[in-house]
Length: 47
Image (tube, rainbow, N blue to C red; front, side, top):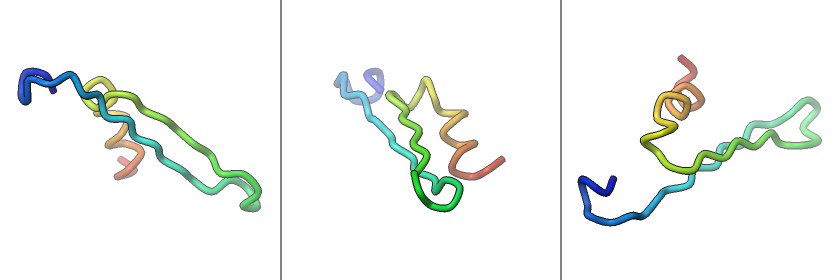
């Protein structure tokens, strides 16, 4: 991201999925897009 914009802003992404019986939601936190790009795409698109 720094190469593109010149800034050192790191995005944080939080994904929530309902858990069994809807009692608790399963959370997954990603800090930084480039490092976690493949896993984020896998979580969002399910491939």
